[in-house]
Length: 140
Image (cartoon, rainbow, N blue to C red; front, top):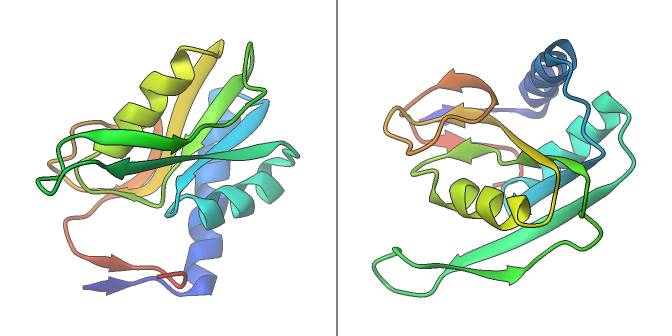
C-alpha cells in the first residue's frame, strides 16, 4: 500500500499541471469524475488558473461492475475543450465512459490522473506514474 500525503499531492498536481501546459492543450473547463477526481480537479484548476469546473457522476448498475450508468452530467460543455480528471485508474472503465459521454457534446476531450494500474484499459493523455499498489490519498 502506498500513502500519499497532502504535500506529496501538491507535488503531483504541479507535475501534472506542467505536463498539460507543455503539451499546449489549454482546457476551457475541468471535469472531475466523481468522486476521486473532485479534489485533484480543484487543485489542478488553481495551478492552471482555470475557473470553470464541473463533474460527471458514474456508478455501476450491476453487482458484477460491468455496466456503468451516468447519474450526473455536466452542462455547458458544448464546443469546449475539456480536461477530465481522476485520481487513480484501476480498470479505467469510468474514465472511458466519461470521455465517450463528453465527446458527444464537446470539441475536444483530454484526460488526466495521477496514477494508473498497468492493466488499465486506457492510458490518459496526462498521467504521472504506473503503480499497481493500493494507493491511499488524503481524501480517502
